[in-house]
Length: 156
Length: 259
Image 1 (cartoon, chains in turn cyan, red):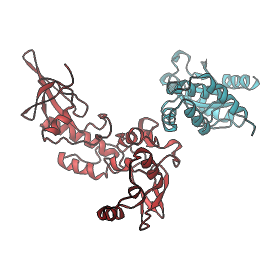
Image 2: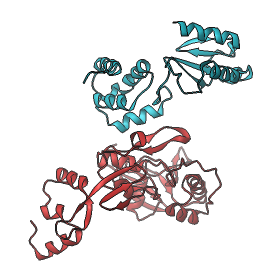
Image 3: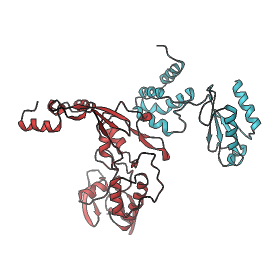
Image 4: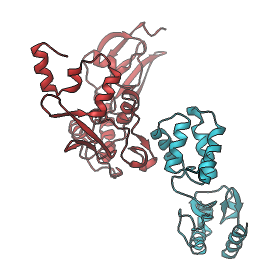
């Protein structure tokens, strides 16, 4: 049986870490980053590799918000809905993104490029309304700006 | 001070000597004093999760009495500790704790018993039990599964109001051996099982295991995987013990020829 790209990526990640329980979170973080989510299969293989019971890996994966058991897009858009952004109509960004990307919150686009979620305060209230795409912050957003940014990412 | 040294403590006006660092709960029980518990079980380490065993404690410090409240199952005794297990303050705290626990487990018989004793009312707080009726998240089932049985089938997952005990991906665990340890330790009766045909099913973990037939009378008496595990853990067990139901076992042992 030939291995899929995902399997190979997973292999590479797993090899990098010491096969012991305290590697668990580090491995999960990298799998989340590279594969954009923790599939059942991935979680099983991680648990096996670092020698923890699957149920423990599952417990950790469901506890932290940084991990997701559902697929996310390659570009994760985090729209700030903290107090300042909320007052500056951050909610509208979410609606805008929904129609722009033709998907709903938490569900990746068909091409797997984008998914968006709401977060509480990115810590840059002076830039409200703000969002973050894979760690990069965008502030003082308007519908037009949003369109432009998404276009840039699509062209990448 | 070493752990084997004796310390003098007072529980409900009884003065007694106990080993240093035994818990207040153990000390009280050794003196015949009852403290209610839910999340406590001898098989696993105390965790102080349910708080129902709360007691009032005090010590004399520089001529003054300092008092506080704490969970007796995790509080180690020390010299001069004075413990009161049934004061108005204790009763008031237990009532509040029960009302909070009842918001998750409004129909648990054990909780309702305690509620009657302490005058706690159901429905004071909004219910937050994520569809798992009567679970107070004390963690006993998780611990026996992990540490006593070492089957690692279930664990706490998710967090906040979504926190619950579950098997990974909520799907029938192939690891469950049907030992029912979780069922037996659950203080609120939240874990249930049914036997359908020759299968033992635990809906909470979506577990489904085969029951074994007694080689003598054909009665279903224990899950097969459980018997296998027993063989591994207690290699000295006689074949008759492993392969026969309790009733047939008794007959054979009475006759005096166990194989």
